Image (cartoon, rainbow, N blue to C red):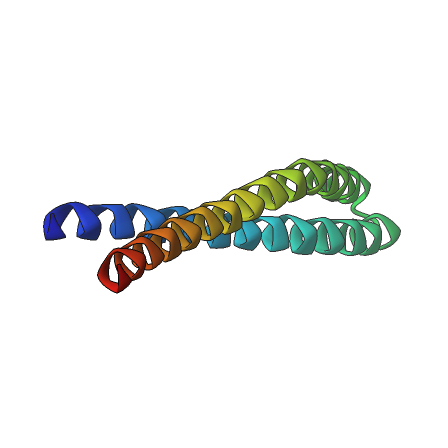
Length: 104
C-alpha cells in the first residue's frame, strides 16, 4: 500500500516537473525570437544581409512556435492543478468517512 502511494506521488511530481519544463521551453522560444529579430536586424544593417535575414526568419519562426508551446503549457498546468484538486478531495472524503464511522 505504501509503495503504491509512493509511486503515485512520484508520477504526480514528474507531471508537475514536465509542466515546469514546458514553461522553460516557452521562455526559451520567446527569448530566441527577441534575440533573433534584434540580432538579425543588426546583421542586416551592418552588411551581412543573408545572415541577417536568416536570423530574422528564425526569430519569427521561434515566435510562432512559442504561441503553440504557450497553449501546451496552459493545458499541462491546468491538468496538474486539476489532478491535485481531485486527489485532495478524495483524501478529504476518505478522512471524513473514517471520522463519521468512528462517531457512530
